[in-house]
Length: 155
Image 1 (cartoon, helix red, strand yellow):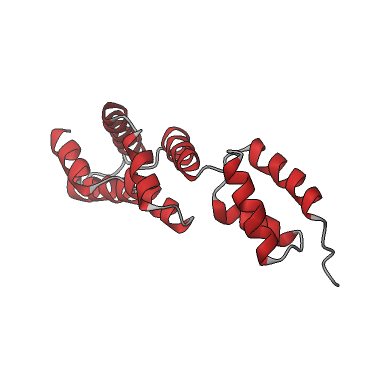
Image 2 (cartoon, rainbow, N blue to C red):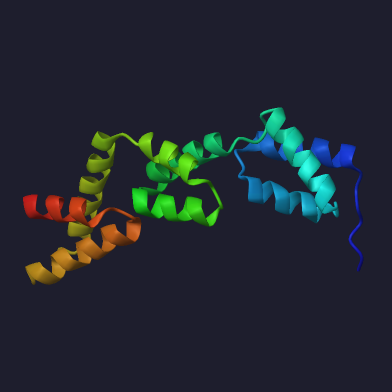
């Protein structure tokens, strides 16, 4: 079945709505435009128009992504950086986004995760196994090993 191509004006209106609904990265928007059946030159033209009209802003996307993943999913900086890189966000924007995460809140969240995991592991009697499981959990969430070790030595 052949994909039908829509006109660039129609595509522009659809993609503006798509971008205003939620922050998007450049790759998501490109993929969506290609799904409309547009050619590379048309896609690039529409992308530059979206950037010029501020519908598409990589820095704003990175900050929203990092803040959302930290607040809603308790992700650490390492995991956020990895996911932003995977989404082809520039290093500059990634640094800008990670700076927005407050250090006090970051440590508070890491401590909260440690307490949560300690409560989940109440039945584990071996202290070393328990600490290792907590450490693995925080590493999987994307927290730095130095922070994890500091917090676990305090508890």
